[in-house]
Amino acid sequence: MTASVGSVFNAVLDPVNRHNPYPLYTSLRRTPVDRQPDGTYVVSTFREVADLLHDPRVSSQIDDGPDADAHAQIGLPPSFLRLDPPEHDRLRRLATRPFGPPHSPHRIDDLQPKLEDIVARLVRDLPGSTADLVDHFAYPLPVLVICSLLGVPVEDEPKFRGWIDTALQSIDPRRARQEQLDAAHAAFRDLAGYLGDLVDRRTAEPGDDLLSALATDDGPDGRMTREQLISTAVLLLIAGHETTVNLVANAALVLLRQPVWLDRFLADDGLVIPFVEEVLRWDPPVQLLPWRRALSDIPIAGTTIPQGASITLVLAAANRDPREIPDPDRFDPERRHIRHLGFGDGIHYCFGAPLARLEAQVALRGLAPVLAHARLLEDPPVYRMSAILRGPRHLRVALD
Ligand code: HEM
Image (cartoon, rainbow, N blue to C red):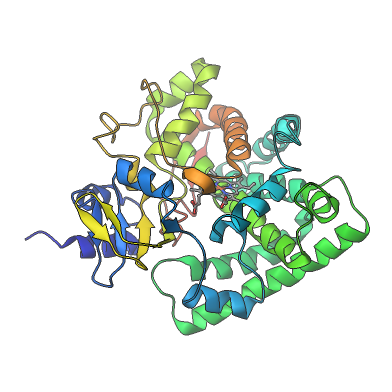
């Protein structure tokens, strides 16, 4: 007996399947746009996911329901991740001014020497005989980088790590219990209070960082309000490291499990760019986007998503759709065209993609020589709980 597709998606969300959801995604794709028993829709094929990411009838905006209650409890407006145009576009333009082209074309490229220093230091400080490549490398790297970019003191990491771990429980598609939600909202409030104090300090005494620039920069769109700036800071701090940690860890796992690529990688410096893209396709750090809603009836793939329905876009399933990607389950950075939705697409396309790419490339160049002398101690590794931000929680290796 085959399971109904509704139960396949439930199995995707079940932590017991976190180490390998890909066979489940193959089953999901048999029904490209599938209505779940709770009336939500799960979309899993490349063309359909890409189309919906570009469709103005699909909203990311929080209007009512549990997410609006959550924001009311946290006391902050939604960040631009959860807004539609025109406000999304205005806030994203404001956030882009100090971050990238055309206003700040060198901000990310200029980080390269600093990134190389951080990577060299983390590699040098790896413990002698066994190491956890998440705790000792993949996690501290993006934290150090996003803190330095935003102007958040990295000494405060133990404080905000706890808040963020608790807060992220509330974004998973499986509804958390009420006490978990309450704890998550309290954690968001603490994080917002902390970043609010920092914003006030940077406004009074601006430095050479993103928060200072956002607090003081008067561009054609005006300034963000203090609350909008705090929401943006929360978004950038979380999105800036909770994703990249998975990219670096997933990439390290490929190199450890498929030594043929490690040999090629060490022999050819140019392989790092397609290698990172292939990891973003084959094992993406953000597996699914559960926060879309249909603004009107949307006919698609032989069915109609009704107005008001919630839509989950499964990026990781789309990235392995054989109708778009030949031999999709094979990891091959030398394939002719690497197409993926690892950074999403359309108006919400990842804001931090240039930074994430650079971080991962520098990280893997620095880590690959270490991996040549490393052996996985646990395979499959322990995974993080989240079905959205999927990646190893630990990656323990023995080092010769
Ligand atoms: C490998 C690392 C990363 C991955 C895989 C990733 C993935 C994504 C994806 C899939 C989206 C689309 C969300 C949606 O459509 O609802 C997104 C949006 C976003 N990402 Fe990333 N991200 C990464 C790193 C970063 C970094 C380093 C930053 C910050 C510096 C960042 C900031 C953002 C922001 C602000 C958005 C919202 C964009 C918008 O709504 O217009 N991301 N990211």
